[in-house]
Image (cartoon, rainbow, N blue to C red; front, top):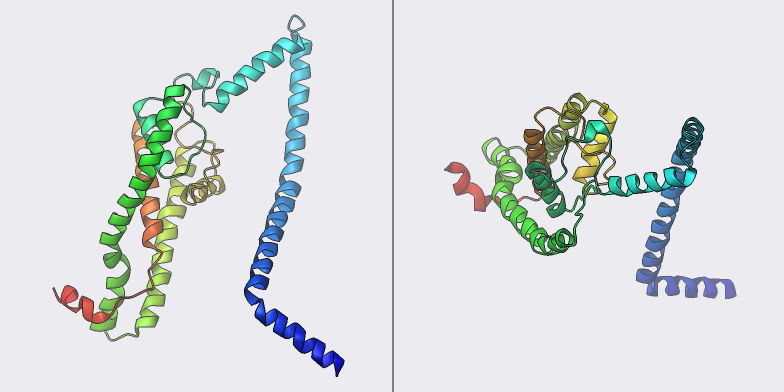
Length: 281
């Protein structure tokens, strides 16, 4: 009898605080997912980091042995300055001296990464004036970009998502739900092909140092606006048609953002009576 009463009281307690329990499980699940990601990344990447550290120590030791006139402190000061410049996108390598980070096409690509909140981090403002302008430009430009993309999506969403579903439903009499599912699958396949597989294939050909996986990885990181900056197109030595290439990548980034917003409501369909006149026209 006491056990049944205790069980009923526990059930009532859980029912009464269902929202709090769900939130607690959500927080716990998110923390566990963070820990899971940290464990996997650490176990996969730590051995490669250790090998790279050992290789750099050997190269440094060999360089100092071959150049006895140079002290370790002088070498470290030089390398520290080189790394600081590299963090700002400036390289001292001879094969990179021809690529400027702030010519017009590179600046246009940088502006697109700022407005799309991708932010690869390979090029950053060097001057205080540039940093201050970047703040003001972002504060105004990011909401303006969202407004622009929303206006574009509102005008193309009917032709890309809802109208094809209604056309096959009204003209051919197919079930609206079945047509919506088939349309979603086709639209998803076209989207993945046009914004992942095809660009990845192009990047793997154009970029000498990228394979298909690295190109696909870059497309995903860019489209998801993560923007780690470990892969940036158009930065290779003697890149052919670099200016046109940068402009094309800028347009591709804007198209990705528009397509990402346009794909959100592809199953939601408005009543058919609203579109009868539009389709007949």
